[in-house]
Length: 419
Figure 1 (cartoon, rainbow, N blue to C red):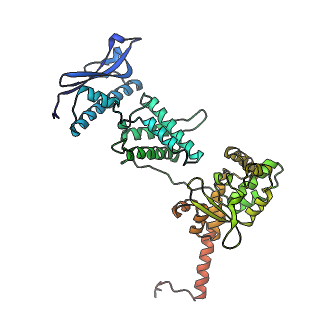
Figure 2: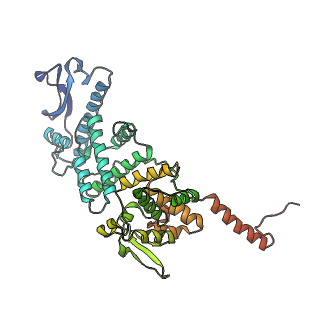
Figure 3: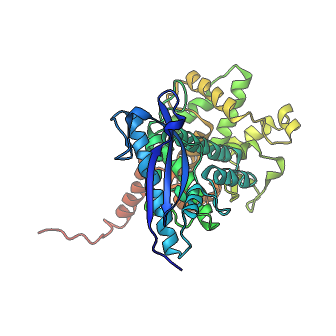
């Protein structure tokens, strides 16, 4: 079979279809004297078209975008030709056109693959996580429209350049009116979700090479917020007259003493309470987000709140242990509570989980391993994100060391005194 062919590419405008000074842009692929024409679904200004250079004359943004697109199409057509040579396929103008347009029945489009992933994961992802994947899909679609001038592309067109351009788009894109562009870690989260989808496509043999191989995410590690003992006490003891705010305050405090994430607190059932190996009441659940088992001995404050609301009409109607609200309403009420209590921190339900890990557990000498088990983490590495080495704990542990040194008349540590 021949693998060497005459091969040519020519970009031109179809002036016979000129309208309002613009005409359709096409590319002609010629192999061994036989040519096929591909419509590129774009119109260019006839007066600016340079047929010798096969580019549009000018330096404005729209012109640069058109010329970049022409260069990308040229590269893609050459890639199709080289791939056929490597695979020792019969090379014809029609075959190259079909490969470029994705007429191969095995070709998948990018947005179709993302939609396939999102639908197939609905049964295994929480609604909050699934919603994030749909947001990522929306941003990919907006990027294709605004920066690539198309509604979709084939998976085979993905490359490292696409990923870097998508990252830059996310960094500058304003989601809506009166909103700011995404921060670095939000951008990286969208890239991370996109990467998981593309990895699925590679595993299914829909894509030969993973374009993410050389792409390195750049997360900026941030300190997680939490309430101090003083701030927690202020919220606990505050006399709140509004019944709805008072209930939300109590439910927030409950998660400060159990470390439950919102979804787990929302779905908590009476059957999740049982007596542990010590004869005390425990919560035993499988976390909705990760399906990892969490076992939590109930502290007196948490038990008190359960007792207070066990007969609440909403809890009884829903068959739940607590009368939870939606996450949005819950966090909205927490902002009011923060104002009432003069707490300047951004009060959210998830802050309660951080507070449990840091202020309630680690600061009071509970081991990282035990804290991890109560939080339902698969690894203590995740727990380390929540846990802070606080001055109070450092002071307490150093005091233990001082006491040991005093008891042992100095506790020889291997230091050598100079004469």
